[in-house]
Amino acid sequence: MMRRSGPYEMVARMASGNAVVVFSVSGCCMCHVVKHLLLGLGVGPTVYELDQLGKGGREIQAVLSHLLSAASPSPSTSISAAAVPAVFIGGQLLGGVEKVMSCHINGSLVPLLKQAGALWL
Ligand SMILES: *[C@@H]1O[C@H](CO)[C@@H](O)[C@H](O)[C@H]1NC(C)=O
Image 1 (cartoon, rainbow, N blue to C red):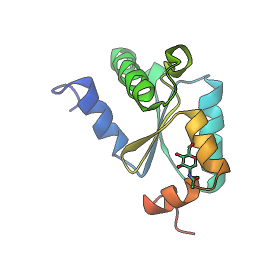
Image 2: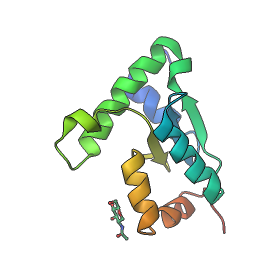
Image 3: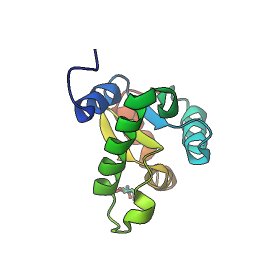
């Protein structure tokens, strides 16, 4: 099903499969932080552990790394090159852990989640 098209297409399709989708790697500390933040807010995200997806997982990480560095306002590619965690809300890339945390702190995360249908309360 995911073989026919390229890795960008594959990421887009996976990312729009649920209101909230988290791309993670098992054992990644910041991924754990993001998943627990979302769970704590009452969101049930779809989580993809990319290290468990073999070759496809590595292709997806390359795509995410590119998308995240393009989305990051800072030109410091050395830190923004991390591919995970990558959080998608409503099929749109929100960002990595820093973006999620700053949205959480300034109160914009919950409205985003509600808008995407991930939270009802
Ligand atoms: C909250 O912070 C995020 C990330 O820096 C920013 O994109 C967003 O516009 C901010 N929202 C508000 C309401 O300040």
